[in-house]
Length: 475
Image (cartoon, rainbow, N blue to C red; front, side, top):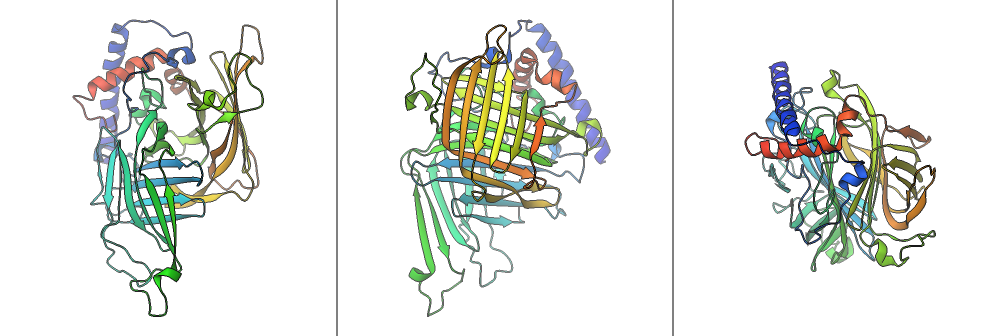
């Protein structure tokens, strides 16, 4: 039955591709001169914000991976950067919602703070709700059947995230965490004119896993948002007579008004064996300023940088063990979008060096942090959620962007900026004692398809049209 379902899905997707190719051909053949030229535009700044593709939930029963009894994971990562209290992150996930006998099955929320990570998880997925075609997830934690004297769980424990708001309350053995704040989107993934899928239209097909999408390169919290952490020496159903709540608790309240936001997600049935990740969107000028532009901090208020690289699996090629090494760098700046799919890197904990070149531009990212500035984060693995990632919110990231003329090797500098609040991460295989040196090596024919800008735009438009008649999860 699983094999039949797999081949039905392949035929289904191939049919969409064939029809799509006819649609693409019939809609002209105007070619873009480069990926940067095609995606960079600051026109019509007054358009309302449009959320990127794949903002919706992908975990429908028909979308499951053909292996491991429809194994599936979807996770959301929301970073919050405050001006004076450091950074925070909210991480929500659902694992194997459909195979009822899976040991990985469950829903969870992580809250990462400068002084620790707090988690609440449940094996019961029945109260998880999500919209298929827009960002809207919610979950109510149920009371555990075997509640111990050391862990107190309220019926009101929950989390919710949608296009307007994030709210929730979780209980961990170390702390109670409550949050409630608005979400005001500013920059997605692309330009004002058009939002893109990070992996293009291929993200709608079972070509590679996991899938990855940045939903907000930058957003803001309106007035009134907060996150509160109440730490306890021990979690008790009722404090003993000799222990008062005043002595047993420590409350930290974060004022999130005007905090900067970043939001991404990933999903699929398999997981990268190794990866790195860089994110920054609170920049100030660097040392080398372009002579033709202002060096004031206001020149970089809208600069957002995201970079990631990983070994991802290729289930469509017949084996879940076959992988390819891919990476990207993306800059949003002054209403323009600069994507770099051709990337090389040299990374170890404490030092991230990533470079990209494409469309007449060169970019260099250099991230640093101390060896001690790391917090563990639980991530999906074949065995379930495990602490296989380390990240810091206090990294320093320097970004340089160069534009090359004909015959130039280095080019002239057009951007030099530093973010002292960058998020830097490594994950996967243990590599604390070694350096990972890599280069993008996307396999054919995936590379030719993914790098074809005209095909990407036309095929994405077609999929959006088809989604009105055929269920395409996430779009």
